[in-house]
Image (cartoon, one colour):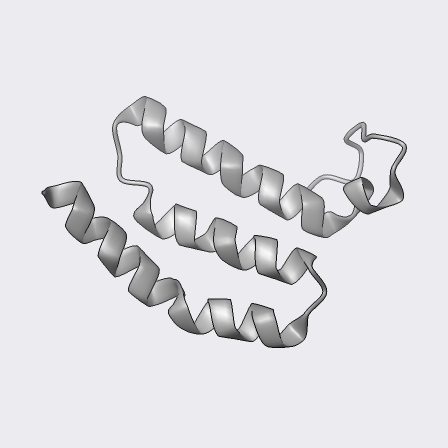
Length: 80
């Protein structure tokens, strides 16, 4: 869960929980890579967090509708 006690840049938009949600997903991706695990599911969550951060509800719903497809495609490329 994003922490509100984190230090952030003076730009207020960078202090938003949506920014920290993206940061948290990037941390999960980094940990998965370090462990040699697939990042396909986590990466699709980053794209959804990024879409939510735009504050465009239509874009967020569109990206969310494709997250399972992106994860599946990532799984397929991990195998090949």
